[in-house]
Length: 131
Image 1 (cartoon, one colour):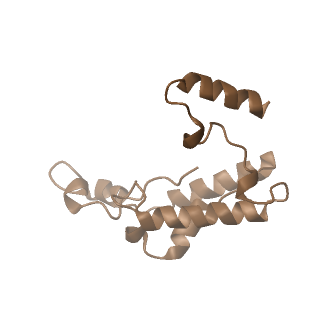
Image 2 (tube, one colour; image 1 turned 90 degrees about the vertical axis):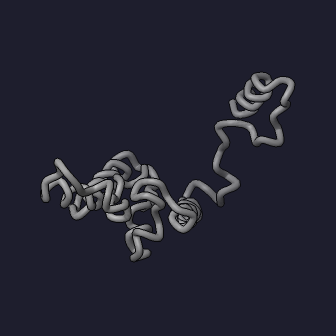
């Protein structure tokens, strides 16, 4: 799962102004350890369930420039998406039950395999192939 939002890159007008206390401003600018706690909790659940864990927050945080990774403090920028993609591919490559990304099963047909005149049938055919 993605990390909780980081508000440090949001415009100042979103996090300050009339009616906001300094404590609220402090909280809104992301000066807390909550994102790390959330990532650690996700990793613990993954370990308990025996699933692979993609360390999205750690990968983004290790980059060092959070403002480059988020467009608005919540939505990933192209740089942030690239970092997440690389972390995902690394996790897949290191997984013992997958040889590579091509071994990840698809939940839906590829766009090129969808018949525009029979969209539902395309999904049904794909589901039959997967079982």
